[in-house]
Length: 266
Image 1 (cartoon, rainbow, N blue to C red):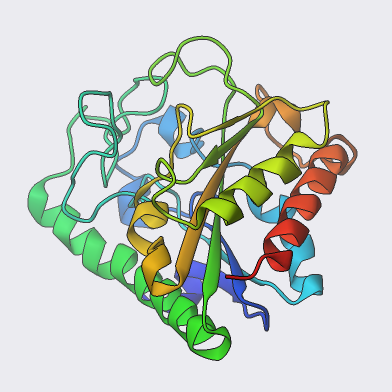
Image 2: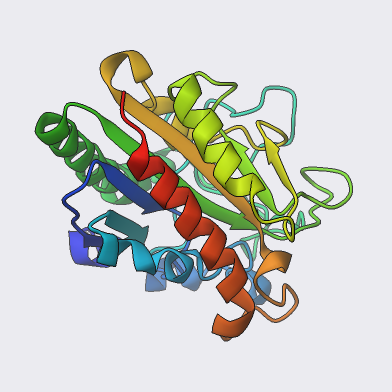
């Protein structure tokens, strides 16, 4: 399970933008699946179909990387040492023990022991980040700068994490620290063009570990996260199958965002 083909799909691009989708995976190692609750085996906290929403980017010359394993194995968008993204809030762990609905992931209700967490980090988290970091470094060397768009989605209502309904389009730039201010403004303007979707910049979701770690604008590395409310492109109660017609308007917005990012120059 520790070979790269089991960890992610990767489609290289020639332009200075990489789209990364770390939570779309649904794969579970068999020994882990045997310990999980029936509800958790359905991997309900998957970022459903986000890799499909962005698959148009490869035709533009943009690279695309998408995880194949579930976030229940290891969360690729969490600090490897377990530091919380939002101190004082309810944060999910590197190896989650509770679902977004606050239900146990494991049959015995346990958390993942530190030794097992370290093993999963070495087997699954580190190789993914090694490949991501290598591609960003290669693009930066080729172009002099690099842009990373980290793609996510979440149900529109998750009381564990936020009150009420989430805006449709949630742009995160770590309070303007993970990318150039002009780039952030250009990206947000692109999201605002379609009035069918609501939007916010650095609201509840400001960017996870990936955005914060790789976004170093002073070094020519610019990272943005886009969290989508799943209701704006799918039936949240029945996530399967993918509804291309329902997703089409949102894909138009994402295409506009990607084109805006590609037009930016430092």
